[in-house]
Length: 75
Image 1 (tube, helix red, strand yellow):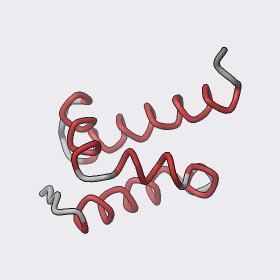
Image 2 (cartoon, helix red, strand yellow):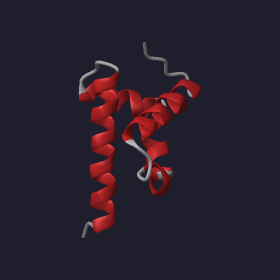
Image 3 (cartoon, helix red, strand yellow):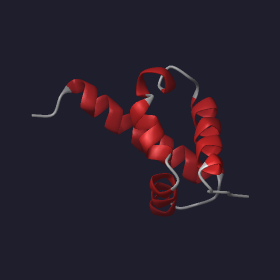
């Protein structure tokens, strides 16, 4: 059975993926694959307790930084 915490994490991931896609003019599928490839999704999962307390702009900035550190560059 899925817990309330797991539902919250999933919802947060979806919001972050969509906002990341919007910021970089990507569709959500491309954004998701980029975030998986360059560690963004893993980062959000590992640091959910902190990241979900930040603004979405800050979270997307963090995703951009993490992905860039792992070789992913957009813009």
